Image 1 (cartoon, helix red, strand yellow):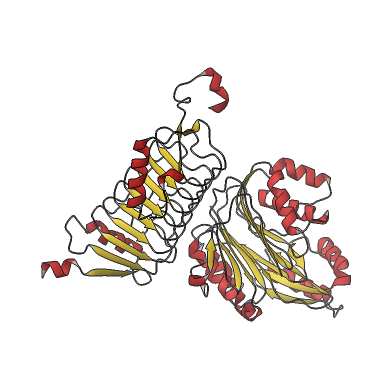
Image 2 (image 1 turned 180 degrees about the vertical axis):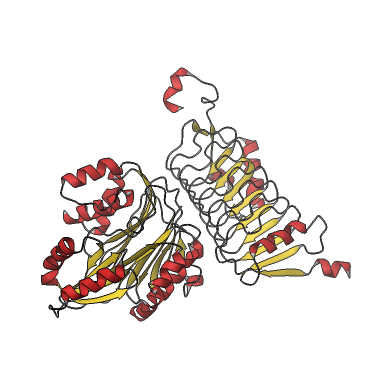
Length: 236
Length: 296
């Protein structure tokens, strides 16, 4: 009986009940909760849907969401069956967030862990100031992506916009398509065996089977902006 | 912040629903701009006639006086709507009427002039503004709405959006311009006139100025990317056109949708979520520094 209850799905209709109730219910769930699978219907571009979850839940959002969906996520898997507004999975700690459509600006910003998969395109500032999150984008990303990115991986199967990886620290960027321009202190780097290995795992985790690691180029920090150097004054 | 909504109908059968659809879109953007709101509706025209949308803080007295002054001339029709009124005149008499308004009616302001355009804007919650002018029952081919959270100049009726600086033209703006003072001086030197200190009015006037030089709306918007400095999402209407442009940094939010029936703009997807057929629409975020332009 316990097992059966564990497989039940809770459906939450945002056209009937307020967002705050949904998020409170999701926050009430702990590890081993019987209500591990949630479906959210009628999101209609609402903000802050499924933010701050701290339990291994599966949340399916049926439709497009607004600002900050699945922000600060821990342990949960949140899937948006639509597109996401600005700041999706902002500051994610762990778990997985999947966007079936496109994501607006600053997707995965400041994320510290977990995996963000965007199956469409991401717009500007994707992965800005990322601190350990892994981001995989099937389409293209916009300008100023991975700005000041500190650690983690950003994988892009399409093209990257202007100023990729500007002022980057130690995050690793893999791009299969064209890069419009690289930002200050971001350079192309050699793909060594450990990078192929890491990329293979990331693509597998994101469920991508039609891309070879040999098609990607790696970009990272030239480490010239770490300390003040008068010769670099123009770049600061 | 500020919120923008826009709807350009491709299917004429939807024209009676334009106001209803736009008022629902506007309502979702109240939080983005609770201090004032406005909208431009491109409705039906009458051959050989021009509409002037007027506004007055003492509407009752002013419009009664205006009606009396126009009583002898049977050709002018005044239709009052709360603090606004639409004055329809034969196009050849437009200059005389404008002269009469500026000499005899200093407290009446002109919101828009054109064959199709009407503009309504007021201070207050956007839902209340839409209700007082009965936006939901207006018909037309395209419409643009704005909810304002003021950053650049005071909260007044005249500083609410849309701004209209040329016949059948209007512009709404989310953002702030940093070179509006110098650009305004250049435009004034070239004969353009201004009603406010607002940065958005400079952008509207700039586009009018470019179109006076012979550019179409698309070309004028293209040129604005070189000449305007600051943050902006613009949605612009002309008699037959509808345009969108974002600055190269593109930090102000924008989302668009297109179906066989319409093109729609919203600051957020929430504004589009209620549109018919949105589930099957092409929905995308407009690219930075890229002009989008539709013309019927």
